[in-house]
Length: 436
Image 1 (cartoon, rainbow, N blue to C red):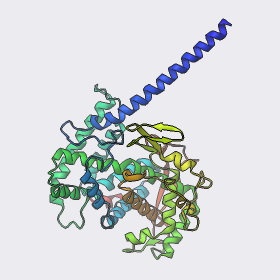
Image 2 (image 1 turned 180 degrees about the vertical axis):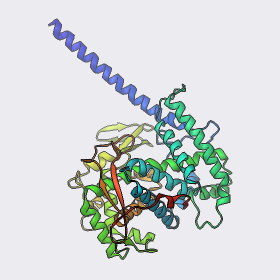
Image 3 (image 1 turned 45 degrees about the vertical axis):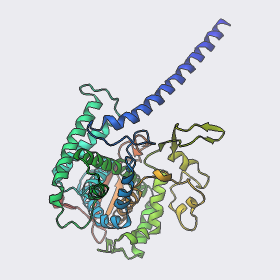
Image 4 (image 1 turned 30 degrees about the vertical axis):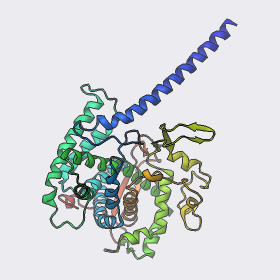
């Protein structure tokens, strides 16, 4: 009897310790999200910490006029002007991938690709290949130590992150100061142009520090999630060759693909948007492999959910991934089936908030149109200019933290193709000095 009592007390003590540990873990997690905002920003920056997202710097939450700014940045006209630049960046990257005699790490190279797109297209910086490599390496150090414990000790992740941030800001300041000198003959306004011009129109002169902070936010917003989605896209095209062939058939049917090559000058925004099967493929990739699992919000008023009352002011996390996995509107949820989004089936049209890869409500991702455009162009280029194959015996396991990505980065061998679909090896020297 004494032994049973001891076991019961021991079990209760263990349960209590587990509950306390979970509570502490949740509290520390919440504080880390808030500290991430302040710990990685310069003390001189006066931009306020955003509300409703646990300190995560979603674009447009810092002040109201930024919403209007980024409405211009991601407008139809702006996307039309970005399109040829994005296509050129993607084409250059695919040539480099194909020229590599060894398999590439798709996730790491997709990070490099999305970073290059953000720097050259979205921000309009003209930097050399050497400077771009340095910027990317520094930004990687910054991101890798982003969620370190805020303990400022030598060799700590926090110290490495701060050092990387400072180095990054110096390089960005140099690029910002040189930007007016590189704008001659430029045929479009990038995000930084619109940001600075709109600030002046609203009677606000952004300081250099605020410009640097805003620039890092823009790069960050376009970096990890786009790389994750790009990697998932390539992995699904490898898993499902018939899907890739149907993409090619659609391009041929629309007169975009002839003798294995894209027809020059035919790739316009309206044309891309009208490619129905391509749209289904991108949607299905984002349904199954949403880059982020969810987001935090603040309850604006007290409400009840499944009999549980949520008080006003509480932090609430909604799960995008669980929503996609459990929604009754999707049939056979584990299967990769782009046709579920076709006009005939339209599973995503059966209700609100069943499909939300970019979040929902007024704080959904402002850059979703740019992100989907990037993925569509990448899919078109993959279908028309490359042959690629898995370099490992089986597909890697996928993990979800910090964003969805394969554990080994996805090792793939790329081959360039000529007009007869024969393998070719492009010379990497042709890319030296190339600018967008």
